[in-house]
Length: 218
Image (tube, rainbow, N blue to C red; front, side):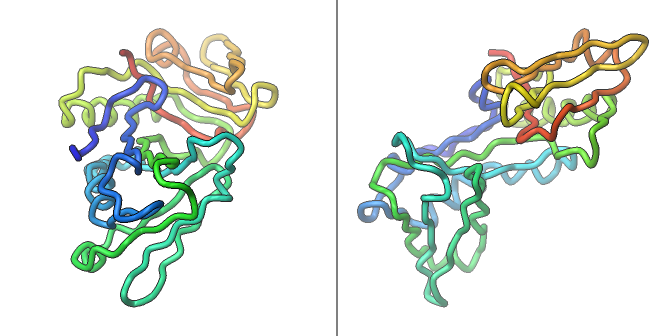
């Protein structure tokens, strides 16, 4: 299995994807820890960029399977290590050299081939409802550097705010004037670097985004 690369995909901005079914399967719904460690390790350089974070998510390809219904555990010699799954599918699989040397089995309660693990590179959540456009631009500059490091062809064109729904979300751009952007049906608002970030001083969020991602060109 080749190591996933950052920067493939427009909507999964700067995303790494590993289909568990495509990895080295030990038994049904099981995978070797080393395979996951290798995939997650590909995002390790994100730590060098303080305004970015690598977020692990797992989801089922089967309709009607909520993230909370997915169980994950590492069968280590020192005992079973449960990996909690958040309502949004976020997880935190540990990257541990001792576990890598042991290479235990990582098991799930889902059928073989039905899960996808992604590591998306995102901006940190703001502490309040007002975000300075200069801070967003600094984060996007870090994403530029990460793409160059990954030798990706895509370039960062803006920032994508994802809200829980299209009714409560939205942003207001403020500077010498105001511009209101409402979410599309998927709860997304995209603020472009040009002209938006260069024209406006701050971004006011109508609600807390569930994700903030660099928005890439093709």
